[in-house]
Image (tube, rainbow, N blue to C red):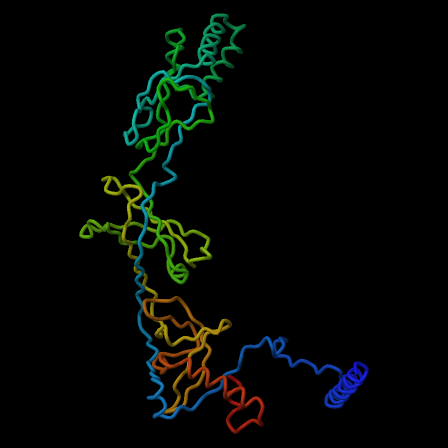
Amino acid sequence: MRILFVVIFLCVSASAFAQSHSEHGGNIEPPKKSAPDGKTASKMEEARVPVEVPAERQEKIGLKVAKAEKKNVEHTIRTVGTVTADQTKEAHVHTKIKGWIEKIYADYVGKPVQKNQPLFDLYSPDLVATQEEYLAARQQGAIGREIAATSRNRLQLWGVPQAEIERLDKTGKANRTVTFNSPADGFIVEKMAIQGMYITPDMQLYLITDLSRLWIIITLYEYDVAVISVGDEAGISLPYDPDKPFTGKINYIYPEIEQETRTAKARIEVDNAGQQLKPGMFANVELRKNLGESVVVPGDAVIDTGKRSIVFVKTGASRFEPREIKVGPRIENGFIILSGLEGGEEIVVSANFLIDAESKLQAAIQKGTPSQPGHGEHGKK
């Protein structure tokens, strides 16, 4: 029984092979049809052809058309931003020598400080020894000049204030503690320094931030990023006080798009001399951009095939033709069209996916039949 089955299988296979060999002129495998650009037909997008839709059927399927408008476009982007500190105005306070904090002057978070204002007094045996070495070398005249220069330079490299070194020169007495000052104007945002604490150079003692100028970080959709540019002015208002708007300017657009949300961030710089804004606040942001005169279509009119964008243009009472277009920025309820469509042309805005399905079906039918009069023109599009 098994032998009989094998014989039948071989006979059927031989017959199929002979038929295929005969139909394709001796070729075992038929050649693949190639597109003009060299791509195989299987990789090409489905073709589309114009379709005829009678008026009564248009009404049944809910087909609607609208005109592509050519107008001056002012695009408005509304979003919410988060107020943050200007990172270029932050100062991290460390020491370059180890020791013990003996006295704290900047003693709480939020305290305003000015540049060169005392922060804390530090006792360090190394500082005391270097001061005494410097003073002793100075008393040796020319012989100790090089040692004195080295000791003085070491004090400067450790961050000892210039005023303290001048006091040392003037009095000729070493201080047990050295006062370290604020490197910048601002507010104490973080404080790790505690009186009596032993510190090392790797420890951050304070974070001081100048809040006279702040950043507002906003989130934009991917299609809005193409519209804005550095230097654009933004209108800003606070949720709790919308009647007092103010302005800022975009000074940076972040280079990456977030994969999950398809959004990007931009940064607005604002003046905060009156301390109205606080880091962590939310702010309402509005950007207005004049895009000039453009052809605009409703968003529902555009079909994105994944490889190109098309619309169906009404060219007669019941005739609709597929048209490839180049889409520009997205605006409130539509798209700017860069090419492929003129202002005043009527396009399908409702039931266009039904028309698209019919167009692809007709193209598939025509592909298997001889070309009909007029179809050559459609194939060129």
